[in-house]
Length: 232
Image (cartoon, rainbow, N blue to C red):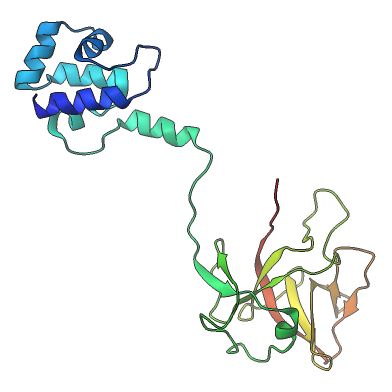
């Protein structure tokens, strides 16, 4: 059997029926393409004609050039585009991984160079939407102080993973991690300003806003990405 005929026949056999019958024999192929047994014999001996390849592309979705020459993409451009449009799941690539550390470790954070190396953290978090610096780290949100009670507003429920970059400057409206240099306790809040004074504001109004004009309070990094986890 000519190579082009074999490509066509093999493709047609594995292609699910689309309004036509399944192809399991050359006779089935002839019926789907509306060609005679003599034409099929000619294709077996001398190869599929250009007209036959075009008809096969329309019927089965295989690229005519691939049938004739065995080169290029197997599926027609139209079929590939249709498959892409029908899919709502796409692979994404992480940009890098950052260590997931404890809040105690975050409170001990001193310098932007104080970053972990591979193998020094129990868990690493893949970062997809931002480009964190070398000293970036991740924290798991604890408690509900950053859970907004208002529908539709940004919220960080307990268990949310936040990615913190100490090299990013913070401005009013940013979400930050700060620490008390006396107690070495870290906290995650929204940075706000009012009347020239700066505050760490929770999204849950049940918790107090913290003024950070106190020299003991120091912002150690800006939150640049967050990831929520859940199950169905």
